[in-house]
Amino acid sequence: MIPLRDANPTRRTPVVTLSLILLCFVAFGWELVVLAQGGDQRLGDFLTIHGVVPADLTDSVRGGNWISLPVLGIVTSLFLHADWWHLLGNMLYLWIFGNNVEDWLGRPAFIAFYLVGGVAAVAGQVAVDPRSDGAMIGASGAISAVLGAYLVLFPGARIQSLVYLGLFYQLIAVPAVLVLGFWFALNLLDAIGWIGAGGETGVAFFAHVTGFIAGVLLALPFRLKRQPMPALAA
Image (tube, rainbow, N blue to C red; front, side, top):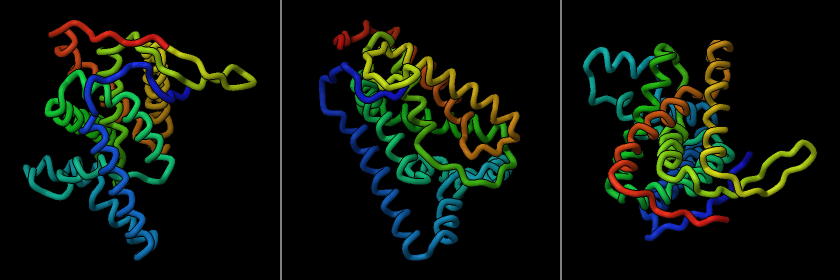
């Protein structure tokens, strides 16, 4: 099931969501420049410095060194991506679901929400693999928080999705609760499989799971505070 767009209009231009997407593309362009100038080795060093290396972050936190590159990497890692597919997939999800969450929370609150969700996602992955020396990058954790918030705020919104029906794909309007519930279930199963594989799958599934749960918990007070905005049916 691949979401393509939602039938859930916003009341105002999603400035923050668009800015986050732009920053991710700019950061990826920077990565391409580093790769062109120094090759894979230099790019690897760049991602190690500006991504999250769980072992380095764990040592910094335990040593009380809160102002350090490993800690700063929690934020900078949210704008870096491994390749075009990683970037485009994340940006598609951010655009589909982020604009409505921003519209509901308001721009300042959405910025704070996005960063807190990203931090929670990183914390969840580091907690299960604190001695890993591989760099963790990508907006997936923060975007997972956005998905969790969307589920809470717009469970009945219709999501136009490509659904695999055995022999072919068909475009179907699916309720958000099914799309996002399916997404979470898959990532939870992958996270369990990640443990069985000894953490060698190359994807930080626990960041996805933790980010999603954080998004749900952070969005609940906003949902309880006021009545849901109506979503248009497809």
